[in-house]
Each structure stands twice: as structure tokens, then as C-alpha cells.
Amino acid sequence: MSMYLPRHFDPQDRSIAVDLMRAHALASLISEDDAGFPFVSHVPLHLEERGDTLVLHGHCARPNPHWRYLQARPRALVTFMGPQAYLSPRVYPDLVRVPTWNYLAVHCQVQATLLDDPPAKDRLLKNLIRDHEPAYEAQWQALLPDYQQRMLAGVVAFELEVNSLQCKVKLNQHRPEAFDRMREAYAQEGDNGQALVRWMDRLDMGAALVNAPTPTGGRG
Image 1 (tube, rainbow, N blue to C red):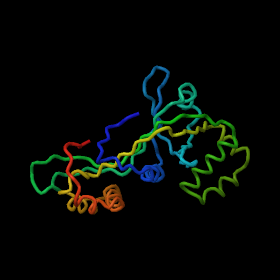
Image 2: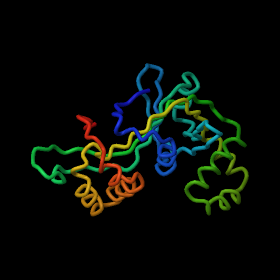
Image 3: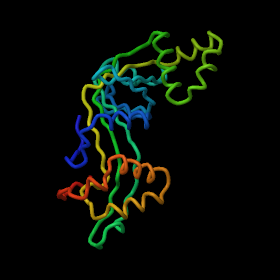
Image 4: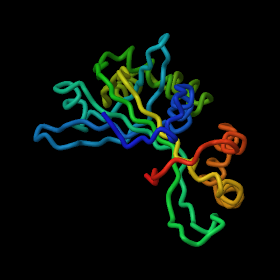
């Protein structure tokens, strides 16, 4: 597992990756199919911290062949995409510039274990419900048992133990001369731009960039 990760885009703080995975739970789960080609499913994942170990829980529809690929080849890749937005070269004080795209992302190398017994699947679904709509749990529990069992039988659950991860926070940290106008531009945009501003504030980028050296390259 690898992605292009210049040093100035590597936050070196696992809590940032954890927060991103929880806030942007719809992940891309990537495995090899039987022909050796990447197969992708987009699935919401519940993150559990077991001491220093991160474990992701999810499920797919039983007709989706992805669970069979995980069974045959348990090693897989999971990616999360956080807020992202275009950045115009107009934020720079000079004209000899090019556009770029800022974003936050996490890549996890995982080892998969299938969980196909009803109690395990029920626990997983309840965790996802608590993540996204806690009030629905009472409605789920009130459903007729045979209906619940049919719903559970229609999915295959899996546990993904994270063996390694990379977190990339690309917020133009290497271009301090553009920080103020970049922040102003994003603050006037929609949800993604404003989310990037919140991350810039969380990382205290204004203060961090005052005395930071300017690295070369690093557009991607």
C-alpha cells in the first residue's frame, strides 16, 4: 500500500486519520477479483479502536461477489476521502501559478475476516445505526424477528483489521504566501470549502506557516 505523500502533507498524527474515517464513513473497499483486477465496493464502515489496533466493520449485499473475494484473498485496501475542493491560482500574490486541488484522505491496508453468523451481523448493524441514526435502533429492535432474520440473511458482514495506514492532509501547507486568501476563498464556498477551513483552523495552519520553510514541488 502506498500513495504519493510528501512530508509536508503527512500530519504524523493518527487521531487525524481516526477522525477522518469516522466523519467520512463511506469508504472504498478494494480487492482483487478472480481475474486479478481491482474490484471496488463503496460501503459505510464502523471504526473500533482496540487499544492500538484499529478495526473496521462493514457489510455488503450477499449477491455482491466482494465477500467471496475477501474470503479468497483477505488482504485488501480501504480508502476514505475527506473534504476536497478546487483551488484557484487567484489566491496567490503573483500570476505565475497554476490551479490545484486540496483534500484529506486515508488509505488503510487491512486483513479481512468474514462474519456471517446472525448475532455478529446484528451487532454490526446496531453499531452502524448508532453512528448515523441512533433513534432508528428502537425501530430496528421492534421489527418482527422473521423480518430481521431475512434482512440479516441478505448481507455478509466483515471485520477489517488495519495493518497499516497513511493519512494525507493536502492543504497547500507548502505555499504560505497564499494562506490568507485561500482561507477566505474556501470560507465563501459550500460545505467542502468550509470543511477545509475547519481543518485549517484545527491544524492551526496560520501559526504553523509563519516560520515554516517552503518545500519544493508537492502539487499532488
